[in-house]
Amino acid sequence: MKNYIGLGDMFPFTASGADFASGDGVLSGTLFGVCAGSIADGETGEIKTTGVFELPKVGSQAWTVGAKVYWDDTNKVCTTTATANTLIGVAYEAVGSGAGETLGKVRLNGTAA
Image: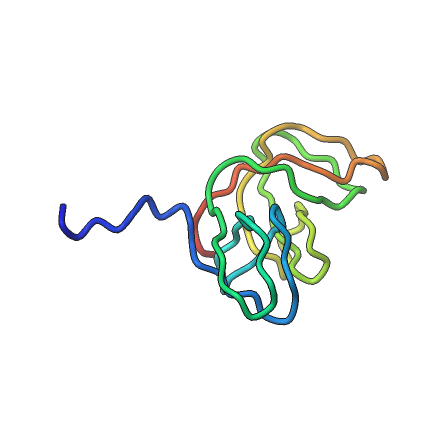
C-alpha cells in the first residue's frame, strides 16, 4: 500500500511549558500517551498511545480489573473519577487504596476523548 504511514501507536508530541521524562504521562489535545524518551520544553518527541503502562495514581482509590481510568492533567495522576478528566483506558489489574499504593497498571485505549 503506497499510502501506508505506520501503526499509529506512536504520536508526535511537542513539550510546552515543561520538560518531560521517559515514562511520563502526557495529554496532547485530547489524546493521552506515555513519553517514549525525554522531551525538553519546546522540543518534539514521541508518545506511545497503546499498551500497558504502570502510571502514578491517586493513592486513596482502589481499582478493579477493567475499571475505567482517567487522566487528571492538573495533578498528573490516573484516577477513576471522570469529572473534568480524560478517559485514557482501563485498569489492567486490581490495586488497593492504601496511601502507599500510588502506582497502577493501565491498558491505554489509544483514542482521543
